[in-house]
Image: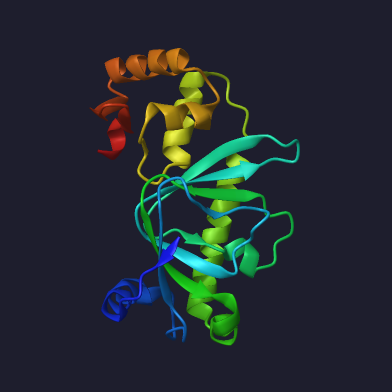
Length: 207
């Protein structure tokens, strides 16, 4: 992680996110993360909000039985730190950068009074938290076949309704490459999915 100390860049980023705030927080930072870096994890909870501006990351959930499960892909506009700010117990989310990521950082301590009294921002926090919890619970739904799992995931868990890579999809669906490729080919032949690149598939209804 490194901080980008460029006031003009910082201000231009905040302008794009200003609709999430009634009042500008007094302390803002720009942080970048390299591919593979963890933005947060249970043993090192966030002490600041992070709004993803550029790049993407994968969010994983550590279940009570110790299993690590792929949850969803975070892209531009995703807020991290909502669980920590709300002091939710048992926060077991990991977020890993899948490419270089740029974030607008809003430290809790220096901004607490302003943020706690900003109804616009608090609604944003609640909506982001509700989305994560909903995704976590819906991924527990028992689905009968791998084909149904693929369609369920693309419709409900990925913001772009696509697989960015077969490897990522295998983690999300807990299946082998051979099983997944067979289902993807069948869905493409039926016209349900469109192959948009090497390892990239998207729901046809969202093209």
